[in-house]
Length: 359
Image 1 (cartoon, one colour):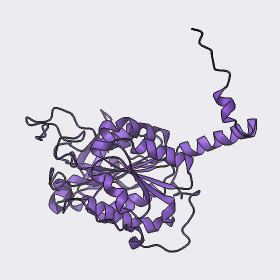
Image 2 (cartoon, rainbow, N blue to C red):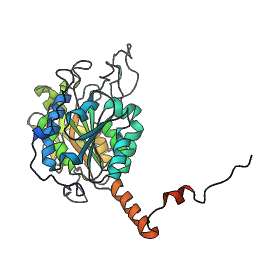
Image 3 (cartoon, helix red, strand yellow):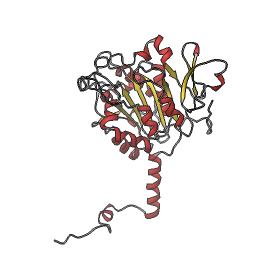
Image 4 (cartoon, one colour):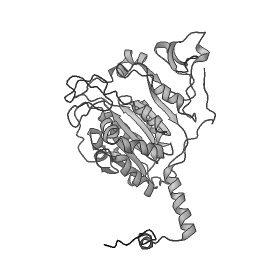
């Protein structure tokens, strides 16, 4: 059964409080003078080039852009961007970026993190940034392994993964980052692939236009410790049958000659993949990234098999408008000043909630 949005098409919004650049910028302007130091062949190079190439589109001066990272291979990113940046501490990039975004609304704030950094020690910070809807853009590089610490299994590694830390195979069920983000009520959730420059850039474009938190999971190859993890989605013949490209307002079809599609099961209500025929073509699900409920987006995120990656959707799963935390906080502060005038920190510290200990 087809579904359509009840809210109508979204109008892309810009970072209205972030000053525009006074002169035209190019990709070269966003390349720092630091030597890029990742393993030769690492997927991070492709992501870096895509982001550097996209940044001029923002039309934002470099001094009004900040990249905040945690710990991991991906977290070298701020060194290579000719903007402001901070290489912070393990898992805490969303928390640090939240403070920056809420206190400096004239900045475009981007978080760069990995599957280990964001979903293990940083899991708590990630979900709260998503639910608050802080004006952040989070790039989550997912290579399904710990690369910087030399090849231990990560929160997204498939069950049975043989690594240095799991010589008999991982017992953990992996996180699905898209499902996790949708469960945390994220207002923008997308997935893309490091080697698909066109698709990656388009997803970045939509995320940048989104007011609030945007999370982009980027499948990224680690050619040293987990090489070929996403070959099923990159090999031309395999990818044609495995990749489901989501486009808002379009029936969900994929495969050679678009022979396959996604429908909702009339009995269970679950989504399933079918071979398209004249009899079921009218039942194909129409992708609605702007639907108020995340239910269908979550169901789409569960289509992929975590071991084979068969039937993996990429693109924007959800893009809805929700109140932005930064804006709400600024409104509260303005209201407090209007009601009580300028605050007095000393009076606050010595306020009525004090007591004397008599010993």
